[in-house]
Image (cartoon, rainbow over all chains, first blue to last red):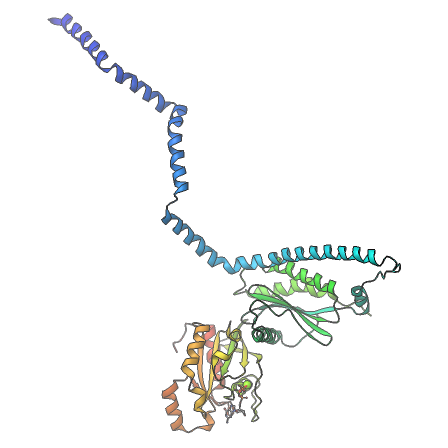
Length: 271
Length: 165
Ligand SMILES: Nc1nc2c(ncn2[C@@H]2O[C@H](COP(=O)(O)OP(=O)(O)OP(=O)(O)O)[C@@H](O)[C@H]2O)c(=O)[nH]1
Ligand SMILES: [Mg+2]
């Protein structure tokens, strides 16, 4: 047949192929289009991914949850003291603010009631009892201590006068506190202060330490409130980290800060 | 300087306060003045050129350690359990007491001390040693082994892993 025959064969073969494969060729072209066009591809794949994500969200595999929880638990435990030391003063501040606010409201209401009932009392004394007390006797913060709850070991201190051994005072104070708290079997109540004669020790408890102020002289409710707020602010700023094993430099730093916060501002005026 | 809390405990009248006084002020009193609550004092000790401050809590005696307020033990680095060599009743509960202390303070350094050594014979000492396996026999009266007791504790607290007990 020669060349012509072979050409004819070729054409025939081509037609046959067209006839047989046309459908397939069309699908191949379609697939190629889908794969090569980003838009088309995402149109098809996105619903699948979304479905998977949803399934994962709904049935997050229990073993994963366990692992994640364990990690979180561990981290929390490691950082527990630190976290609580950060949170404690802040919570205290919040609660104080709330209570103060409620008190202010109450006082305003009381004032209102009083004014209404005793409107004939023209000469309402302007000076409060608090103010009179302050006028009479200036109070001084003589000493301030930061003491570890359990061991009674001193974490920091400052004082306006040379005093007896501070480690001993910290230990005794902790022992007395422990004794009182134990004697009354009040796990949720803590010693807030000790008074004797003209002297007072104000105690403010935090998570694993407490702050004690030794005050000479009479202190008004307002001053007491101010001091309490100052203690909270101090703790939030200076004691928001792990206090288990303080560096030697920590004591010197504490002394400086305690002095600036509590001793200097409360020096008695010369009489 | 580092500070550590050391607690002295045991039955009443065994000589806790006497050991405390002997160590801190090097004095001894024949009179018995029972301790009420706790007394805290401190003394610094130098071991191999390193200084450590021992904050010592001298507790009131109790017939059983479970009667001691738990919080007195908390945060302690060492416990000195004192008994009176001349009064067997003061070491009859020794093991129970130590188990209890260990439950409050796991891994705390404990020193069992038989005091008033000057009052008993060598034979009695031998018998009691076998029975109680103490770390020290002391006499607050003569001062025997008192420094050794406290210095040993200081050394152990400064270098917990140095020499085996
Ligand atoms: N002979 C002798 N007497 C001692 C010794 N140690 C203490 N005493 C005497 O034993 C009595 C009780 O001693 P304290 O040191 O008060 O005993 P304590 O264990 O502190 O007693 P409480 O505080 O009541 O628990 C006192 O009369 C002491 O003089 C000692 O080593 N030898
Ligand atoms: Mg005593």
